[in-house]
Image (tube, rainbow, N blue to C red):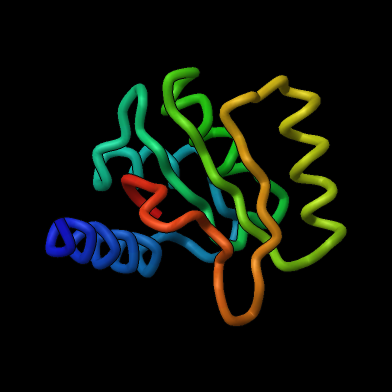
Length: 114
């Protein structure tokens, strides 16, 4: 299990290095991550440093109502915005968490991929 998780994290790292920095297309990035990390209906995923939440919303659609997305952020204004997005979109499969400089505050072993 730890080997699989390590491989998934390595895949995520390499995929993020390959993604364009400017003019980000979150749907394309989510599609690539979804493929690399084998997201499916019912998957539980986390986005660390969710920013404005574009990828969080896209991931929530990809994992469906049976899945779940944990969205973490350290900036209090961005956390408030993420919570508003989750409420506005009625995305009951999104949990917004306040991250910290020293940790994500994700529940232990909560996710299929991060």
